[in-house]
Length: 560
Image 1 (cartoon, helix red, strand yellow):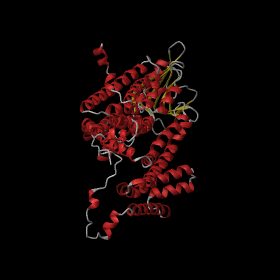
Image 2 (tube, rainbow, N blue to C red):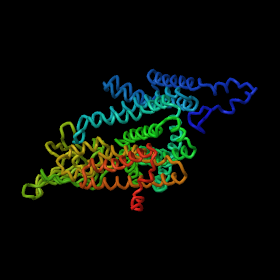
Image 3 (spheres, one colour):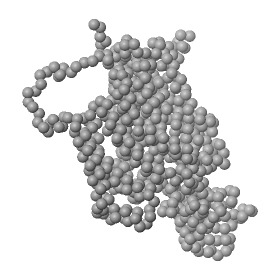
Image 4 (cartoon, one colour):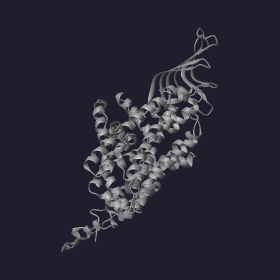
């Protein structure tokens, strides 16, 4: 009977299964450790510990914080949402720590479709807490204008959908993995191991290089281990979005080259599958990586980049890292319509009663351009309820020659300036997520198109960059399948060259869009469109078993 050499569908039996069994009988502890009951036992113990912790927290509060939590709820009529969130936030860490041992042992010991249950439980728990926390903190800002911006509720709902799908995707991916054929699972396994190793290795190298640059600042500021760890954990979403396409390229070239050299691709084609069907699991993984990267790039990645800049400023100033606020210094703003010039010594991004503008000066002019009223205050903040400015501890001059009137608290209403409008020139678009970029564009809709081009281009790039993962798969997959050593080297060279061209054209088109020379949509998606067409042509040639080398432009010139 003919058999395919080393085909993935060939069933084999380990040689150790034919050896005689060991005569020694394992003890009860050894049998327990080897059995699949251990994850279930640990899970039950973890859940019991979590419920016991919550029970004793409710019945017998032993700390001042516990007492304050319930006293406030009973006597000060706290809202139910705030009470529930504070309670969940207080118990969340204890509940998760009690369930982590069972989850880890389940991943180690459980095999096959049984993995779906612990992964589903973990994903649902994380998604539930994240969703409740995000609604608690950000729902108000998505509906009500807190800093004078124009909120976009649809953008907030899209954020919840994208990030929620990313968090709940592991159980769906696991379910699909165990429902497909053995050949598809084999292709995923051959690709998955080098992909995870490559992704982890690149991220680790980036962290080591960054630590070499900023390690001296950490030591000078006497930063503890928790601060350094938090600094790099915050950067993980941004790092993953930056390197996932490179990891996909290298892993695809390695996995497909390995299967080509061992004739496994030929075996799959001989089993009756088309080239497109063989590559379908890898295309699905590319689409999955694009979805996860989109969820990160929607808000988490730009926020991670901003928090990195904030923490570096805090560490350089040897300040506490508990309040990470990026403060713009020596900020000026001119309201041409109302003839008022603002000068602020410190302008924080997150304006609130607890985080105020420091040392503010406001100079007015009359219609003839001569100096008018003036205000000076040590601190100020904006009240979103009645759209008023509140100045504290300062002095007011009706005219430049009049005597200044001191005040402790001055409320000014009817002004068109808002914190968001003042911050317009200070906000970097690369630090803003999609929702914040939309708020900026809608709030400053009166600006010229050329002035808003940078923000519109950045917003469209938030969606275009993740889909580069799928473009990389379309290009690397047909070039990674070769039938000779010479073809393998050529495919790797072509892939790396095209990957570098993607980055070059993406950067060029983005700069052109930010400068107003291209429309924002064209600047963000043009490079993806060009190389997606190239990838589709290469995939067509490979599926038809045509020589891809005929597409080399140098051959056309040589032939002519």
